[in-house]
Amino acid sequence: FCIAMAANFGARRFLRRPATLFVLIALFAILSPEDAARDSYDLAAAGGHKSRRLHRSPPRQALTEKERSELISSTDLFVFDCDGVIWKGDSLIEGVKATLEYLRKLGKTLVFVTNNSTRSRKQYAAKFRKLGLDWVREENIFASSFAAAAYLKSIGFRKKAYVVGEEGVLEELDVAGIGHVGGPGDAG
Image (cartoon, rainbow, N blue to C red; front, side):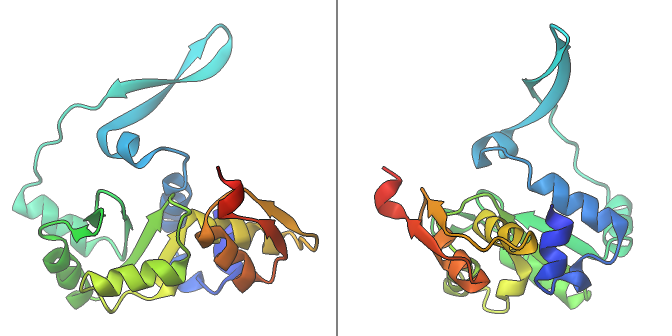
């Protein structure tokens, strides 16, 4: 799904390596930002069916300087969630700007993902600018609102979509040329 969506919208340069494809697909899993930041999910057999069982992840140990250097030098593309990783509310998290600037200086490609559909990529780019990250472009941002519109475009959807959601979804549908009705007033 994400592979077709990204290819159709000119993001091929971000998706050159198979490992990158896996990372993008994994990051579009449906988890709340709070759960994704705090917990991990485990599939366990229950009554013959697979179910999601929430369990606490053990605390991670800090990388050694050598491990950090090897990780950075062997990685071409870094994918960051936005909510709780880049910012909290309308504030940039401490150390984020310096880290991103360091990775950019090394020539790394940076991609930002979010499952928050309240904003379009254009609106998220404006938020990045407001937070002092004015180099982030729409092409670097993969929001669920964009993913939904890209998917509909990729399957040749030609009818009207009824949206029970926020402005971000409507804007991305407009960009993709998908007709729609509904919107924030119908979201309740």
